[in-house]
Image 1 (tube, rainbow, N blue to C red):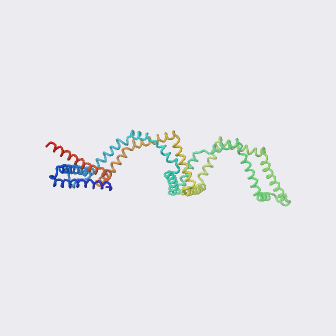
Image 2: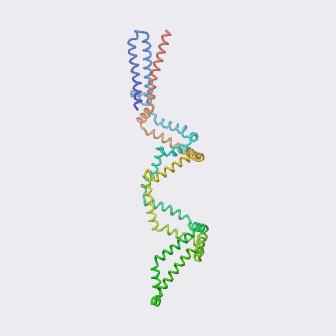
Image 3: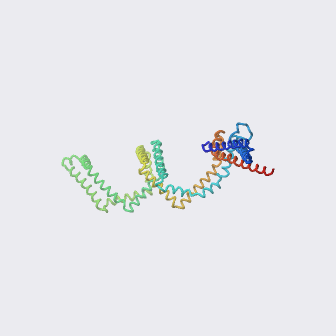
Length: 410
């Protein structure tokens, strides 16, 4: 029992002892003055009221003086019935769909959440942000990296398997050609070809020398042939680069347009592209590459989340603040969220109300008699001691009134 309840019990008991002492003193000196009779009557009735209320209060929790008096120790003796009654009361008056809906209808849960989240200076909001970042870090650390990476890869692969990439590539290529955005790519390819040819010029000359016959090599014409071939290639690439209407560029343009058309409309081309896609997705090399990418991404996310003022924490904070502002300022969003919360809560009360009250009932039933007595007495014990004090005072006043009436009737 808490100290305050224990103090009130001592006061009530002390008041009873005081009334008994007053009664004994008044009884001894009752002939000294007529007023002593009033004092004795007050003290006598006060003792009766105090003892009656002490018995009533004590009988709730235990047997008075340990005597097996019927209808005492009411709470420990009837704890199972009390548990069932409490559960039935909760079910009938608090967990009905009508009560829950009426109560939830008076609450703007979305607005309250928005007020909480929109203020970035609140310690609670900072705690939400830090907690979310720490939770993300702990989840990423607790997962098996290889297994998680494989699951992510399998999920991406399943999505890619369902996506036919050939028409998508063809449509992107058609749009690029229509907007002439492919021209810089052609120019880049021509420059790359020129740089590659220049870097591999010795290999080209060696190939021409090897394929020339002995007469050309003996006369030295193979070197002139190699020079002519290389010069012709350099000249062709230069002309293609500076002349937008060069015939070779036109052939490249036609080839790209046909490729874009076939990617969208040619079943054979689409099947070949899908086959290449499946080969790439199922390649062990791609799997190993993805595992490395995933591990680097995972470690980066963990390190970023663990930094309180890092980018991820700031992004989480900004996202939380934006969500709070949206909940504050968007009545339609508030209405939708409040309706969802209300329907969900009513559904929980309707579907799981019996299980909730059964949990209350079974929990109370599992308590032993001493536990339930202590918990109830600790909750209401102080008020019950006031009953004893009030009973003492009221009893004394009633005794005083009866004594006065008795003297008046004589």
